[in-house]
Image 1 (cartoon, rainbow, N blue to C red):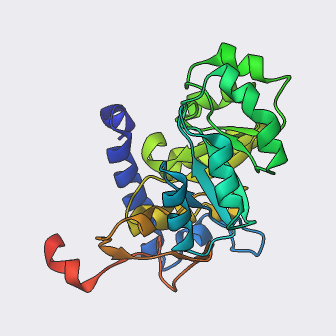
Image 2: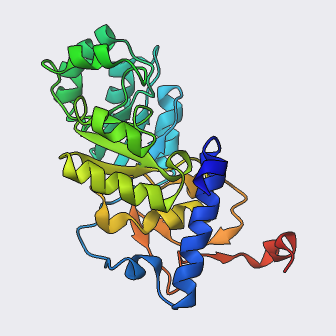
Amino acid sequence: MKPFLQKYPAAQCALDIAAHDLLARKVQKPLYQVWGLRLHEKMPLSNFTLSLAEPQTMIEQMQNVNFPIYKVKMGKDTPLQEVLQAIRTHTQATLRIDANASWSVEQTLQSFPYLSQMKIEFLEQPLAPTDWQGMQMLQSHKTLPIFADESCQTLADVEKCSQYFEGINLKLTKCGGLTPALQIIRKARKLGLQVMAGCMTESSVGISALAQLLPLLDYVDMDGSMLIANDFAKGIYLENGKAIFPNEAGIGVTLKQEYLSCFGF
């Protein structure tokens, strides 16, 4: 499958998830059990993402949910202190920052003291994905963990990231599915990296597949299905950041009744 879909990781991901789901359904077990994993109380809670916007809009996004952790999206021109001060007046929840590769080295260095002051848990992808020289310049000055996102999309990226980051954020649609995700996790652990799994804005199919990895993760961002109005499936969902697993085989997904005809059922 991979040689033919190497340039199309999202398509590879869809087929890979379907194959894992079918395997687990054939033995009538949840996929994580087929892998020899079990759910446990120490599995990470998901953050809820506050999309890049004016501070008041971010506050409104936050007030629509009740999560113990929020990921705050930042851009090159985002007023860091104004945004974080506004958020902190409304919650003492754990905060993470995702700069989406938009900051410069100087901007990142200047942010470190304030990020520590505001007790930010970690900073995700401050610099451009291949700015290794810039990441080297951050090494002796950083005051909080930095996680790779855009810098670490496939198994081949993990080793280099281990030299510059404390952790990685893998995404199924970027790495090609559950099979490469498991390989990435094993490699990251061997290199001493922490592991987060994230999502795109996607249906409960993708989120439920991602949730199978939860027993192996340190952190997770799996709010993608909460951000769409036309989710065609039911599966693993979040309650205040905690993943709730239905009593279903495979990845735990069923199609919603109103969408069955769209899929020929």
